[in-house]
Image 1 (tube, rainbow, N blue to C red):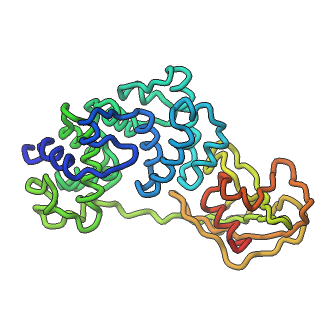
Image 2 (cartoon, rainbow, N blue to C red):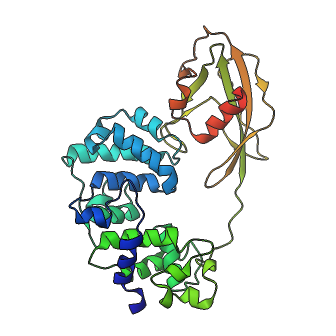
Length: 352
């Protein structure tokens, strides 16, 4: 285990850490700056299933608009959902707002400083609790994201395939976690996976732990972690009805609060059904001349692929919205809480 000395990784991190807007890097801490638990928590929630590059602009917008957890708690949930649109996994946005309310209200604006307390917060699971505990409070918590899993799988040449290997990788990662500077160590592990121990063509010659790495010794580090054969995603189909008013406004409604894309905005449409099954009833929001838009909108979710037929109807500028719907003007549509798949449908219908 000496080859995987935390001191080697920390020395590498001190020199090569990434500059991230939510991070207090070693030079900043040396000058007296400390991590803000709110910013650490917000970044970790945003980074779930999302890239650093995609998160940066959202993080900047959120912290400019809601600079404290109290500000976020006081915000209208619909506004938070709008600001979140495009980051995906929308249940995270609802939990984000709920968590802010708990911290700001029940906990007096202070985040718990240990994993147990953090895990009791809405939307905070084992990984996020460990990350906040380590990075914000320097607790010796083992933080294991996808980057860390890859690093550990290669260091120890773990043959078990993912996702079966996950518990074992976490146990191995725990053997590396130090009591000194655990927050920097956790971020160093993430940075090592993101910049050196990458999925393809890892830069092993630059790795502080290369001498002891079992996968490198075996000559094929890029084959770790082992992957099980992916199951084929089923395909579902449906129809999106895009009504366009003469002034360019588009008809929208809100999805049910629970379930996939819960609480987000959408053009009205049918239930999505598996290909080959009986299609759902075609129920446009109002009677009219609905014409089919050539082609189809396709989007892949975690567990299935979706193909949407898009139909458009044009109506007069004075047309009232049906109950439960609203018209979104051209200068407002960009700010709606529309997931990517529905922006695709509207773009297909309007040529936008």
